[in-house]
Every structure is written in C-alpha cells, then in structure tokens.
Image (tube, rainbow, N blue to C red; front, side):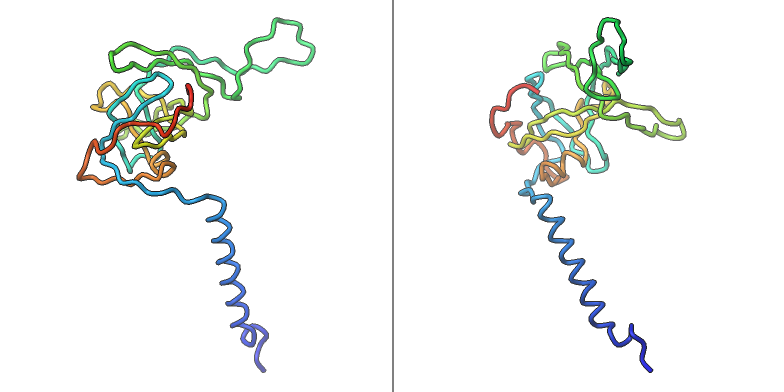
Length: 197
C-alpha cells in the first residue's frame, strides 16, 4: 500500500516550487532594481551638508561607510516625566540622542553638523586589542551622479589616506560596482539639487 506522501510527492514538490517562485517575485517587487554603474576603487564624493568634495576609498570589505569626524558633544535623550514642571529640555528625535561633530572641508576648516544617533557600531581593533564603539548617523553623499543616503560611522581617520570610506551599504544602495583596476572615473555630481542634508 503506497503512502499518501509517495502518491502526492509530485504535487507537493510543484506546490513548494510555486510558493518559492511567488516569494521571489514579491521580494523583487519590494525592492526595485538599481541600474548598475561601474566605478573605480577611489572616487570623488561630494557631501552636500558641508558643500565640499573628498577622495573616497570604495571598500567592498567594509559593511558600513565611515567618515573622519571630531565629536564635540552628545546630547542624551532624557524623556520628561508626566507633570514635570521643569523647563522642557531639547528633545532628541532619536532615543539614542543626538551628536554634534565637525568635518574638515577641502581647506581644512571645520564644519559643524548635528545628527540623530542611529546606533552604536562595535568595531574590532587590529590584533587582539578588543573593540571600540563608534556613533552611526545618516548622511547623504553624491557619487558618480547618484545621491546616496545611508548609515555612516564617525571615526578618527587622520592616519588613513582617505577621509571617507564608502562601504557595502552605500555601494549596494547606489548600484555601484567596483573595478579594482580603475580610479577617479566619475565626477562627484548629484543628480539634482536636493537642498542641505
């Protein structure tokens, strides 16, 4: 006597295949494809918020982008208690608070920015030196004619050649493919005027 599974195995397999195919279509529809653009491993990047341009290293080995910045202050989020008659504090939009930091422009002049803290990144130090925590914010970069906004961690990069590192998060979002044999292939233009970041 044949079992139910052995008799209906072809139909079960077909049903599973159809479900997987439908799931693939819905995922593709949820995230529209981005036209791929080939760029070099070093490219110019324009940061609208400070209206300046840098040479950036495009690093497929780094998960998150990074920028050289000096932290000035962190404004912690402290929600007021109900009925608190004290003067209201400046409430941060992020439950992690806001961060005030500077980035040097092309002339070396510090430009001050303030952003919500999205999260704290845990970065492993070289060797067995443990971990450091870096604040992560949202920033917009113009690169190869594309405007890309995503997470950027704030780091001290003065010992590095490039003050900006573009990681996989922005490469994927911008549809950028890195050709390791090329550099400085495209101007750091924005697709259109979008205002300050």
